[in-house]
Image (tube, rainbow, N blue to C red):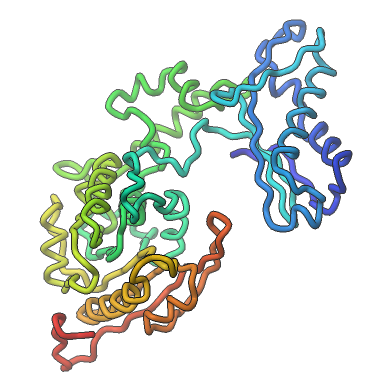
Length: 408
């Protein structure tokens, strides 16, 4: 999204102030006009969406997102009509607007944006249709949230992004569900821009045709758009993409392993990984976390089984997971107890131990892990307060002769 204008929330005291802010936020007539001839009243279509964050009601008296969006729409129509030679105004198109707008308000700011892409970026395009009968992926983690959480970890060696040697790192989700965290980790490891998944890369020149760009990116329809800059940006993203793994390809930054006790969820994860073009990086198996055994040697074998590169033995292991934390889920406490045992059992066999990153919205059930978090990051998703928890797992002491099958 591109910011058009913003104002301190405390300056918005009600309907009149909101209307004034919306009316003067931009030169709306110039932004919506499609003809260079000012006497020709042709305008882009629009759609307005709104989100009211914490404090919007208390600070700026906004308690209805529909009313707030309607106020912006009416202000734009008034501004364009006031400058139109015949008093015409932009039309609303909810399905395929030329210029989608978004207004957001919270306790600090009220902001107006124009949306660059008709499809929101959290919809990558790789997720198969969900089955409401499958509980573990009927409500999967949003892709953009998963990517944001992963970027907060210490997984990614951005100083070594250009290296072309084999990697010695493995990322594991022992309760992967439909595989969102695994797939997003693999895409980041391949430096794949999220928007590339929505493009036809087999015929890149056709994709970069002006009409196709305008169809895919609404920003290409705007009077001030720069299609050549958009083409250049897409070409740069394609050049950085490491997904063509194999002969002539470049190795990713690490490989990914996911497991889950639900066969249908694992099958969905495999399908999604294939659609995302990262199936060669992601190894999924149907197995409970209590049965999961990933010693350094077995991890090396897994990495090399699907790799075109000779991957060395990993020196550490990283876990990322969104375990079931809702108390209404059957056996949730037992699942967290088993998870804690599995994390320690596997990480302690690595030379440098491991790190675990877990998402939870239930402090009580998180205690079943029997581990102390080194860091807690507040996260809000779907109106629920969550925590992204980081745990350090130290390797077993030398000469302790750790047996992965017996450690608990």
